[in-house]
Image 1 (cartoon, rainbow, N blue to C red):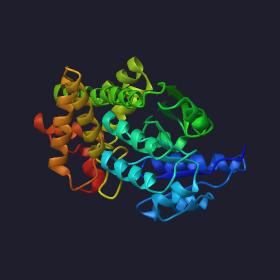
Image 2 (image 1 turned 180 degrees about the horizontal axis):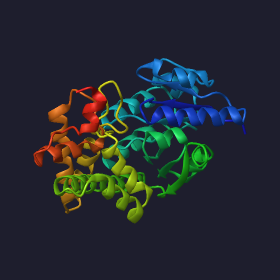
Image 3 (image 1 turned 90 degrees about the vertical axis):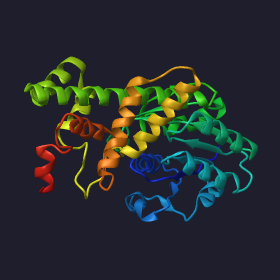
Image 4 (image 1 turned 135 degrees about the horizontal axis):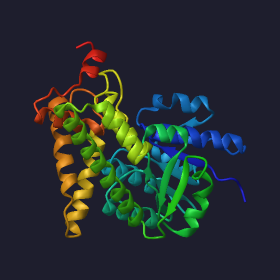
Length: 316
């Protein structure tokens, strides 16, 4: 069987790291170079330097490739991408894999569109921030036809990710698990932010709180705390957020929408969403991380949105 041609669409903060690891793997096994596109092609300069081949459009990727991966920012962009793929011609024998975080209804719509065009669709959202994407340590959550998930398996575990959770053939299940994970992450960040405000206002202090969080709950929770204590909740004006607050707001709204449809509420997520929206209203003219809810909670407690560390770093 001929080695499949792999394609990639989307070079945002996640897509760039994922695609680089994929291209390095393809080079290692002497497979055809990755073909990629992005709305801003110059974002792929480092990917091209690794041997990947840029093309001008999504349709061109779809026409030239057997397996097409994408990782895009939101539901509307994904719908537009899928439209272009479906319009590129007969998708018979092709697999389209999307790694974005979107609403389950969007996943179902995309799956139907690709199927009607003759192709197979796999929903494969990922757990992990951009540093994990760069390191090839993401957790993939896959759902789709078993024939398709088997074809894409060699490009996931130990290439772009460290593990794969197989959710079977019902494509919405992977999206629901991803949303459930996001509920946890957003809630952790809200609670840790509140604990840091408590520590500062009572005089306990953030350093000892962070030590306790690491000792008690491990490195993951400690890493969330460090997004606060290192000032990464509000990066310098010329830097990029690790995970942009606008994307976290989108994810929280998806979670609340799904919960409402299921007849339940996510009260911590509601509070976290309000704080993220407040942060965006207060300082939406600069990069903000999803953890910027901390800044909003600071203002509610009578503190400045920015810590002294942030002010010193920014020369304020």
